[in-house]
Image (cartoon, rainbow, N blue to C red; front, side, top):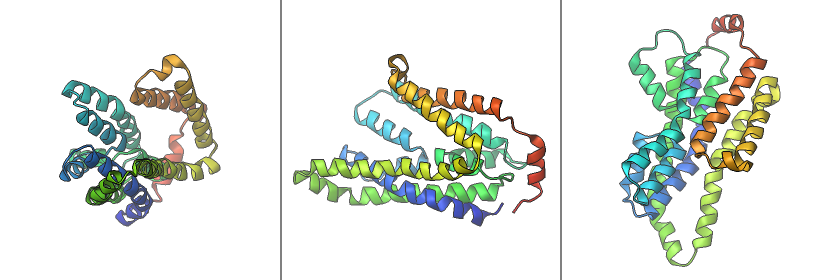
Amino acid sequence: MKFTRGLKDGLPIALGYVSVAFAYAVQAVNQGFPFWFPILISATNFTGTGQFAGTNLIAAGANLGILFATLLVINIRYTLMSFALAQKTEDGFPLWKRAIVAFGVTDENFAVAVRQPHKLTFPYLLGLMGCSFCGWLGGTALGAGVSSLLESLLAGGAHVYYEMQMSALSIALYAMFVAIILPPARDEKPVLLLVLISVAASCVFYFVPALADLPAGLNIILCSVACTAVIAAVFPHKEEQEKMQDGGEE
């Protein structure tokens, strides 16, 4: 699979990331952080939820222990995604390549990569993740650049307008993920069943009091493990089919 194919698949993700990263940068600057702070965070991290949570904790004066524990719980799900991607990568991935790919593992990148019918090559993953990362970093820089304009709106009493804009920008990430998962859910029964089970499990964790009190990151991990375990048991993967598909590498 080629680098250009990865760029093409990563472009919709990059466009979706721009609005979310924009909202993150504006929020960070409005919390009193300097212009360069959200850009630096986005350049060294690639996790929307983690960045929002971490920046809020820093702004609230949380200590390093709380900051570390919170981000560990939120981001540990990427370990599960990395395990899954490792099963689909081509042979001969050295450590430096694995480190680069690991940095680019996000929910949306994982959803696109894991759907590919062939073995994942390093050029493809580099194109996919590099393109989406540029969208994330670019959106952050853009948001930091225009934050002064939004601050002037706030000074003029447009706080409600500001909140509405941030909500609209933040929901773009969820809309993009729905757009990614709907086509395979329509064509493949295991994916559709996984979506339905995941929705049901998320509702259980949201409405049951004892489960709702768990950290949000832990909820995601438990839902992911439980739902994927059910699908793996009902629809076991056949290695013979994967070997046949490996011969048609693009």
